[in-house]
Length: 127
Length: 196
Image 1 (cartoon, one colour):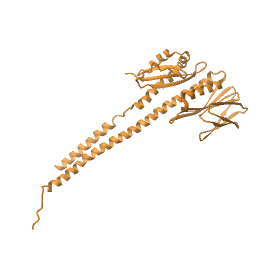
Image 2 (cartoon, rainbow over the protein chains, first blue to last red; image 1 turned 90 degrees about the vertical axis):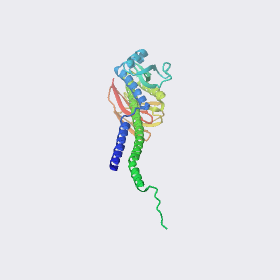
Image 3 (cartoon, rainbow over the protein chains, first blue to last red; image 1 turned 30 degrees about the vertical axis):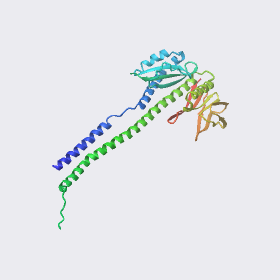
Image 4 (cartoon, chains in turn green, purple; image 1 turned 135 degrees about the horizontal axis):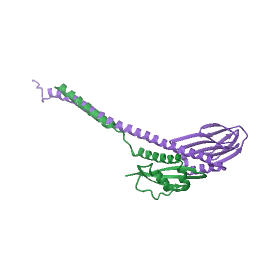
C-alpha cells in the first residue's frame, strides 16, 4: 500500500513539474523594449522603400508632405504617423504628447541638385 | 528498581512519520525545482531580450549607414561641379545632426586633385603618396598629385589603415570610411567611382 502511495506521489510531482515546464517555456514574451525597435525598423523600411522607388527624393524636393503621407499610409497600415520634411528644426506640432512615439530620421542629399534635408517620421501605435 | 520505559506511542508511528517525511521529499523537491525553473526562465528571458534588443538596434544602425552611404553616392552622381564642397556640407550636416554617433572620413579624387575631409571626431595624421596632412576634426584639405595610384594611410584610434585607390582616366573616385552608432556601431569602408 505504501509503495503505491510513493509511486502516486512521484507521479504527482512529475506531472506538476511537466505542467510547470510546459506553461513556463511555451510562449516567448515580447517586451515593449523590443517592440519599439521593431516599429522603428518598420518606419525605416517604409522610407527606404519609397526612396528605392524614386519617390522620396521627389517629395522632399517638392516639400510635398501630403503626398509622402499618402504613400506611407498604404505601407504603415498598423501605425499612426506624422511626417515633416526639414533640415534641422522639425516641428512636432501634430505629434501626440500622451503616446509613446518613435522617431525615424531619413537623410537626403538632394534630387536633381544638391540639397541636404531629412524626413522625420513620428510613429505611434494605432488603437 | 525497575526502569519503566516511557512510551508515548511514538514507537511504530515515528517510523511511519519518517517514511511519510521521506515520501514528502518528492513534493518538496518538486517545489524547489519549480522555483529554480522560474528563476532560470527569468534569467533566460533577460538575456534573450538584451540580445534581441541589440540585434534590432544593429539592424537599424546598419540601415542608417546604408542611407548615408547611398546619399554620398547620390552627391557624386548629381554634382556637376563643387562636389568637394557638397561632400563637406553633407558631412558637416550629418555631424551636426548625429553628433558623436557618426564618424566620417572621405577622400575624393577628381583628375588627380585629391580632397580629404576628416569628420572622425579627432585630429588625424594622414599620408597620401608620401605627402603628410594633419587634419583637425571638421577640416578638409586638397592637393594635386601626379601618380597612377593613390596610396592613403592614416591612423585612427589604434588602427593603422592603408588603402590603395587605383586611378583611371575619365572617372572620379571617392573613398569613404563611415562609422554609425555609439556602443553598438556599424562601420563601412568603400570605394565609389563614376564615369564622366
